Image 1 (cartoon, rainbow, N blue to C red):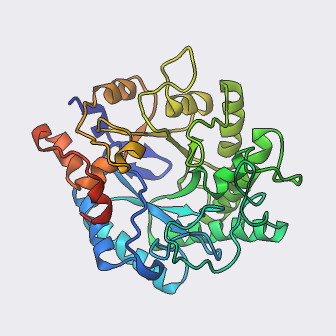
Image 2 (cartoon, rainbow, N blue to C red):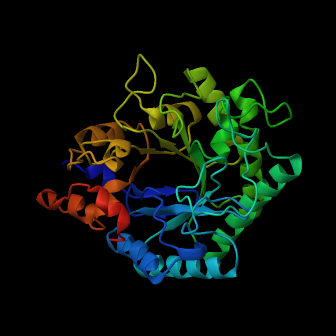
Length: 366
């Protein structure tokens, strides 16, 4: 496995990383009452010890009644929860690592646990969980404003606690992405539009308020995707022109780095070019991008969670794209979830020690 491109330092807008490998955010649900435990602290510390360049936390709920749909997902508000994240970032720093919390609001997504009791109505742009599927009521202007403020407040706390950057979760059919998607955003006010750029106003307003909260030099990442958990075939931008307008609006509002999620990193985004999503995002906006999607494993992640085997796979295609300058960083999910030493093994050429991904790893904090 060629890996030289993965181990070049990365420096951008105050973000100084020892290599180009990002730990992808992965929901773990090991934080009872929304507060991280000693085991969660140790889980992140092990990735820092394993020389991950930038750790992005699992999604953490902002200060809205139903920002998360699982009682064991961590929050990023309140004294107890923030004290827990202080312990996490201190441990990561002691191990020589860098970290960003991912700030999350799930929007109109049902709870995985039927025993979960929501603390209030679910937020969503139009009361839809998918096209034509009613799920509560759309957010009022006041609720939209409060949610924007909640993201900004959480970002300010991340900076105060000492995190190197902050990431907003704007992908996979969750709240911010529900505003992007015309299938779930049919609003007729300023946050709705027939145009993607108009539906991007919610994300742009969050980015603007986050920028005010953290200042001009603090790195802001936003994770975005074309596909949705509700429909894997959805595309928000069907051509480069619409993608340029959409992503340009996010960059203009304050996004420094675009984290471009796709199910398979090697798949081209548009016909006529082998550039993937992150490759086009960088080409169209000029800002650094993170690519992610089944890195280092043979099978894609949705099938793997369903029980399909995922074996260690070559990184040659990833290296080729990075050498070409398609994107700047690469996020690794399941391979790092299964093995905290994955980065070290790649760096040291210990390829025979790489592990397959087993679905059972989702139930353990290795």
